[in-house]
Amino acid sequence: MEDQLATEASPSRRPVLVSVIFWLYAFATFSLAWLLLRSVSRGGMSRILIHPFVIGATTGLMALRMAAAAALYKLRGVAVSLFLAALLLNLPLTTYDIYRHVNGYAASSRVAMLFGLAINVGVCVYVVRLRRQGVLNDRVRPRTSEERAHPPARENAK
Image 1 (cartoon, rainbow, N blue to C red):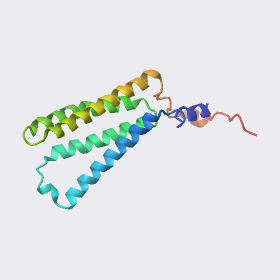
Image 2: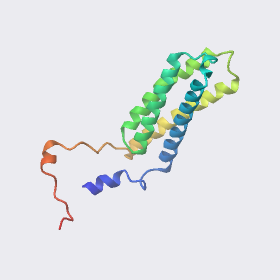
Image 3: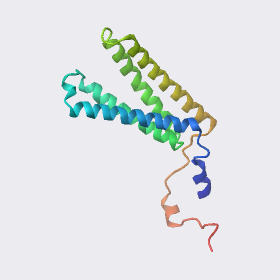
Image 4: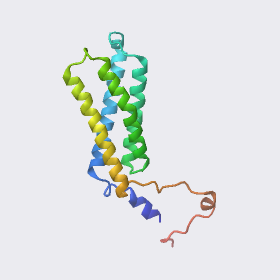
């Protein structure tokens, strides 16, 4: 039983695209955090008029995406809910960001934002497909007090 649970999330069963998504989100999260901390430490935030709500929402969205990527890497079904929540939070933020700066952004910036949104939609579709195929699961559960009091005998016990 324990061996079965251990092999369910083994790296050999993990699709390659899951690892790519995890490392992509990890890189994006740490890059954005580094840029934000660098601009704050150098006093650059006084020159850039960024509303504190946007900073807070972006930071929260980064944390939610990283939690979703970690859950996906562990092949947990909760990754579907986390990625969908991140997408639902990202839609109004991206729309607000695009239309707030109608004259401020170049067309390439708008295209880049829409491209990023398309990547998020694609990841959500992929994660939902993994859930339907049975790759993602939530079978790991905490042991009950009875199971802790009477652990199962090991098969290879001498």
